[in-house]
Image (tube, rainbow, N blue to C red; front, side):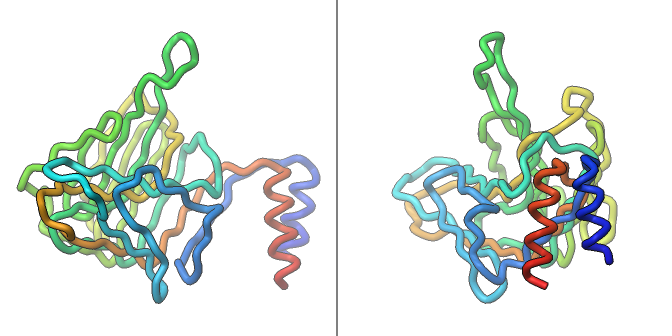
Length: 221
């Protein structure tokens, strides 16, 4: 019954928000795209695992595993991540970003807010400060929740509020992704990261995409 009503609303041209989930039981190349060349990401035994793998030395590394299943802009979304963490000298978490354009409609810079399991940073074009300090002593979390609505960011770690702030310059975002950062020296392996499941609610979807999604579910039934 739910699928029938869902399809009817789509045919009437009514667009709304949807919830999307990835439990990383299989590779889904259409849903994610790696932005960077200094890391390896793979699905293994129900987890998405990542590690820095590079020939570079004595440099900071910024790698983004961008969500591509639904295109932005994004507003009033909630991202819930189950069992997320990192071990070693790396930081891992979720990134929200926005493209800024010049007068010629060319990308001038990309601004990010990076919400790690143990820290939070703002970044321009992937530039990060990798000091020894951490806001929170939690390299791993059972649950991370990030809510974004009209420039307001709310972060929760294992049910506790960690940050709540506004940025009037960011009423909408157009990038969602997992972010992996670290500083490579002459060590081949500086750590690894993992995540069990991600759920994103409030995603924008057109009537055409909604109908395609509905028929996909219907055929699987």
